[in-house]
Structures are given as structure tokens and as C-alpha cells.
Amino acid sequence: MAHVWTYDTAASFWSRSRQNPEDAWEAYVSAERYLLDHRPRTPGEAAQVLAVLVDQGSDRRSDGRDVEAVARVRRYLHQLARYEADQTPMMARAVA
Image (cartoon, rainbow, N blue to C red; front, side, top):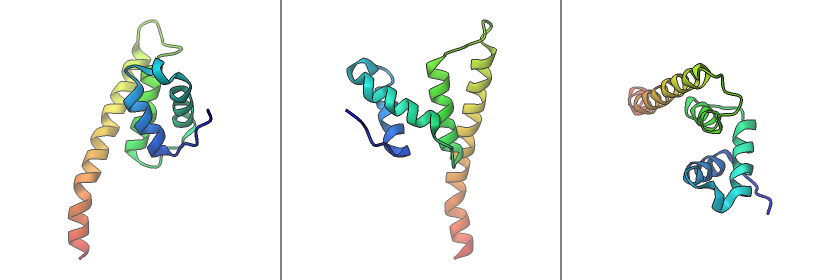
């Protein structure tokens, strides 16, 4: 069954399914491909793409440094996304 994904539907499905993807393997792979092809528009979307990269773990260095580095970038992007979300209400109040 072909899926028509949006960023939000693919990210939501992938996040819900990642612990046990076997039940819906084709859809999981389809969502993962969509996310890997997606050009992030926000730090949160970039963090989601990095989450897919970290979880798939292909072509890792034997010392794991690549995965650790990507995980650090992912944490930073999550922090940046939370900061931006926290700042949005203040900026809206300042403009009003």
C-alpha cells in the first residue's frame, strides 16, 4: 500500500512505530524514506531527520564517533527548537 506522506504524518508515524516497526514495516520504511528526503525548515524538523539517521545506524564508524556527534547535534537542535517555541509568545506580545 502506497502512502502519501506529509512531514507531520511521516514524523508522527515514524516516532510511534520506531520501537516495533515490524508490524507495519512497509509503511515504516516509506515514512523513513520520506523523512530522509525531507529538507528541514525548522530546527525541530532537522532534529527529526537526525533521529532517523541515528536510529538506522548504517555505515557507522567502528569507534561510534559519527553516531555520537550526530546525537550531540540532535540534542542541540532540540534545545534550539524548545528555545524558539518559548520565545515565540514573548515576541508576539512585544509586537502587540
